[in-house]
Image 1 (cartoon, one colour):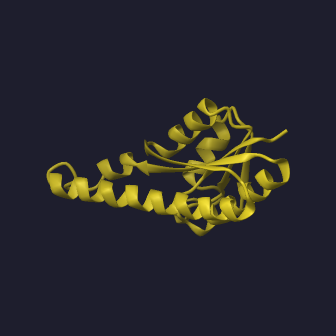
Image 2 (cartoon, helix red, strand yellow):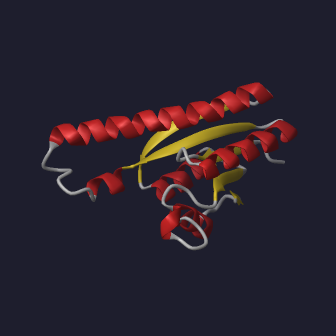
Length: 145
């Protein structure tokens, strides 16, 4: 039975659809969801001048954390309306690695995510995060188009 669902969000339309699917599955199975947003600190580190302007570094990190709180709050709103318990997690690190780690550590029965997120224009079939998660997950993964 599917009781614990981890749903990944990056604030994109695809992740919003994944959240709707997660809430639906949890509602039907009497389960709960954990809404996870990962601040991609590896992407920050590749920005030109990132390390040389400490004030900008802190501001960008704060903005990304805020975006994560907002994205997980939208999922929480959906869950509350459906009567589904929801935990919000904003983590930092490499998105695919963090999602895999969180899904295993929380003993998730299912990981749901959008097939293409914000970086989707760079991929033909799957977003790079979705591709890495599908290839390496020990937890069943449901990709939502």
